[in-house]
Image 1 (spheres, rainbow, N blue to C red):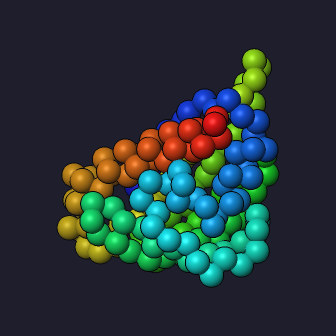
Image 2: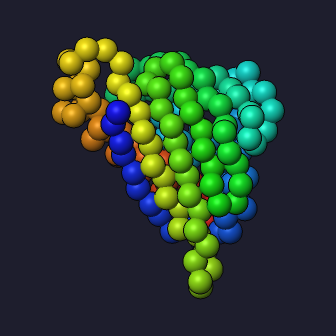
Length: 143
């Protein structure tokens, strides 16, 4: 399993962040490489949906299931493409705003060549994409 993580301070309450994460139909407004979301079933914990994601010109499809959705934690798992677990933690700050932390555990399918590619290329790209997504969410919520 591979891992990337990051954090950002957002001048918005945790509840607003949770609502944005639950708004999966519009996630492509802040998730930089998310091309399309469809077949959304439910909202919040238990919600599932299908998606298309593109990274470095390579597109792949998958499915997400939201496992937990509270103003403190948001956890989702993905299948297809690159299986992963995303854990968002929202920590209210004493002077207002929220520290948003994101930790992603993922598995690159394939042989030893997939693992080597992960260490050389994919992990660095995933770290950049994570930071871009956090920044995009911050921009959306601080308008």
